[in-house]
Image 1 (tube, rainbow, N blue to C red):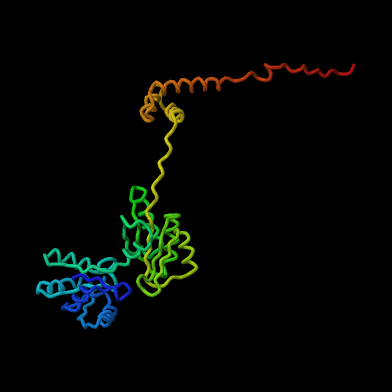
Image 2: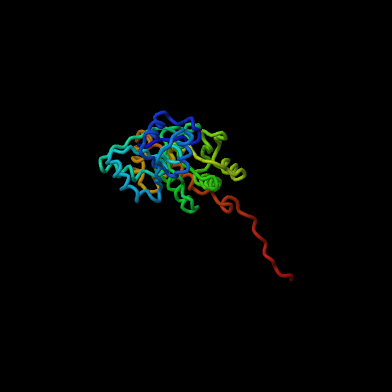
Length: 302
């Protein structure tokens, strides 16, 4: 059973989550210390078993054996919905491969909560987890998303980030995505909850001067729709087409692309040719227009 737990406010625990955790033969968790504090706050004593990214693969066989015995196992993350940027995916895949039942108790999720508070378009959205910690890899990651946008992706983008990397991550985002509407959500559902909604460069400047603390989610609005380019005039299209086509072919091409009658395009092409001929005719030179006075020769003194 995948059980969602509060991301900050204990009041967000559901009655069903309470019941499952209380009835579970074992609770699988990222950090037994954090889950033990949660259980204590809920007034229950559960048998805890650690399951994190470093030991998940090794512990899957023993967990599957307990599921085959009919044991009720609950999987929780440190906060929020399991598997979303948290361990458990490999275990779920292994259980499903053996035909073992997997169920979920829905509940709090930081990414979705940040999205609905951001004021940015809620659908579609793309959750991308944590960006790479290394600057070079992070920039390449952001650029790959930007290229996807140029190819047609249009969605609000969501990342989690550690507080000590927030300022540099926002600077990289601003350099990649430009003046994009964005929001930084911090300490969601907690006492010092904060959501700042500004353009990316302004957010980068703010958090460079005001180091952040707590759990952080970044939301960026979708790429603005590209404005359609103004259609070319018949004259512009003809000038361009005549550079590589005969007049006949250029007229046919421009008529097809502009939707204008071929006779009209042909008439304009003839007019342009006539105008070009006039421009090419050179005016009379100054010498032919007006003869200068002869220059007297210097003669030696007698």
